[in-house]
Amino acid sequence: MINIEEFWEDAKDGLSISIQAISFEVWIDTLKPVCFTENSIVLETISANAKRTIDNKYRDTIKEVVNSLNPSITNVIIILPSQREEYLNRQSVFIDNEGFVTSEPPAQKNKKKCPFLEKYTFETFVEGKSNSFALAACKTVAEDPGHKFNPLFIYSGVGLGKTHLLHAIGNYICKKSPQSNVLYVSAETLVNELISVIRNKSNEENNKFREKYRSCDILMIDDIQFLIGKDATQEAFFHIFNDLYNASKQIIITSDRAPSDLTMLTDRISSRFSWGLTVDIQVPDMETRVAILKNKSAQMKFDLSDDVAEFIAENATTNIREMEGLLNKIVFFSSLTNNVINTRELAAEALSDFIEEKKDTVDASDIVGAVCKYYKITTDEIFSKKKTKNLVEPRMIAIYLITDLLPMPLVQIGEIFGGRDHTTVIHARDKITDEIKTNPRVRITVADIKNMLLNR
Image (cartoon, rainbow, N blue to C red):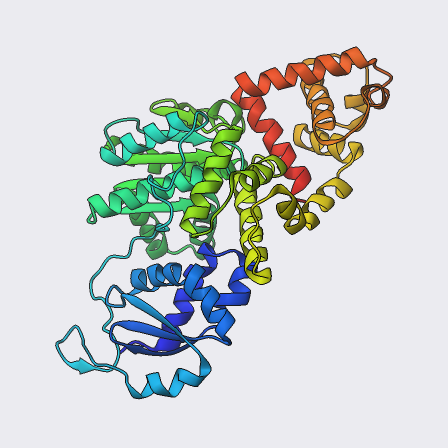
């Protein structure tokens, strides 16, 4: 029989990924499991207002998670404390996997659990100019893994959809070919597993490690840049790659930078990335960002007006996760105050803390410092008169970001950069503006530095 307390703890682990942290703490973590009845799980909440909110906004999400854990549970019932005894007294019976009568639903036997998040599918991925090529490549690989575009290398800045596409591929393959062995790990996990093998000096563990990575049909490695400086793991990955590639097994890799920028990886590894297809996900334009927000709000059954969607898209960075976080804040504020937030003014009120914090915490020195940290140069170098290639681009990006993020006169910006005149500032601003539109590397660099500044 299923232990309902343990089952609900597993369900909460899944829900904590799907629901924004503050909403999870207020609405989900306070739920108490009562019993199973009529193929439903019964959960007790604290008040009528909480029941109304959970039924309207979170019950479908809870149902999806508990059903993924046990397909025999097809419904969720939210009750008040006064109803607890009533439901405990009318629990229904179920037939378990052995055919015996039980008071709790049977655990699913021999059902291979798909490790990918259900919400990340090709259908829920919002396509735009910035990601259409990457999306098409991922769909092709999912349809025919191991034969086209092997390896597939996807790169982009933080929070632009790499992980969503990996899970979409995984979900598609799990549904189409459930017998396939799909392995999805981060590069950090690969490093830690190898360290454990080396420390324990166990042939058994070494054999398990080799079998795990060489027996999969599709291998997904997230954030391959983490292997930089990890020589032993690079060596292990080199042999894993060769074995899988020679066996026509699909390899999918993501990174925060292009293969040509992974200069610290060994040549024999980085050269193999060029054997297949490399695609990038660019910073989404305003229309795509609004579409992403509208799609997300529809999933949450929240009526998001165009004005509010545009307000969020304008005030967030290019990081999609941050946009979704601000949307969650709007939804939470609306549920707490029982007010419809459908104008820019009301959205500004709901997000006032974020907007004020962004304005108050970022100044010119922060921007210059972030750029120097990103490019590994000193402030003396960026302010100098030197025009070497390694200094010109970061200097121009710093000027662009100051003009973009701060209401500072051009003359004052020029003074910061060693007394340069305002025409130099204009040139730098316009140059980077154009580069963002045409050069994916610069676009990703600017987005990453913005994220460094606004998510400290």
